[in-house]
Picture 1 (cartoon, rainbow, N blue to C red):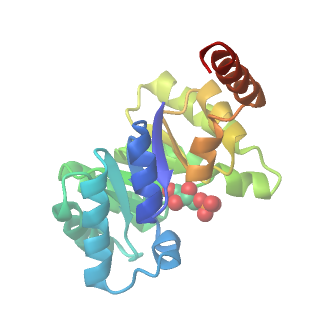
Picture 2: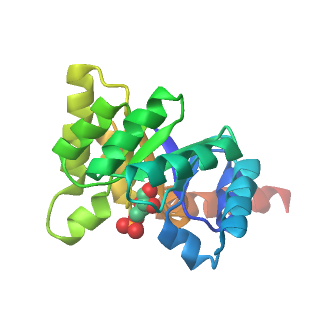
Length: 218
Ligand code: E4P
């Protein structure tokens, strides 16, 4: 399972990259705004900076909602760097834009997916990634991980190549549950990636190993 980091924060992206287990980055307009990145030039430079830090795919989201606007923005974003994946919302115009960009050889990430029917449309349009938002589903008492399982099964049954990118991950259990049902990618906050390393028995064990070493070696 690939790990993407779900942030536009440069320090966090660098920290995750330094761990050596990072496969890519996802951003969205809210995450960019959170970092105070505004204005076309700054936004473009920020995406380029992220691409220079990581080796894998970097999702950059369009803000247009009409077909012409989405493909114009998508082509511009894709031209910035070979690692850029154009993030397109799951709306009618978005499906057409995914199909168009895919045929042009541009990678896409279909975002804001909340049902298996939406994931079917994304796959049929040829999206590189489909992003079901599991945390936001859990927030409305719907099992987000169950949706990941359904989409993974659909892809395997029909041989769709669209990668299932579990998004809106809130904690380590989400990552583990996504792994158990075969998600291709989990895009996570840094805290959730780092949280996987934690175990009290590891801390206790390490403390004892070091204390025992000290006893005989001083
Ligand atoms: C996906 O790519 C989105 O950027 C993200 O995972 C949304 O997560 P949220 O529900 O925490 O905003």
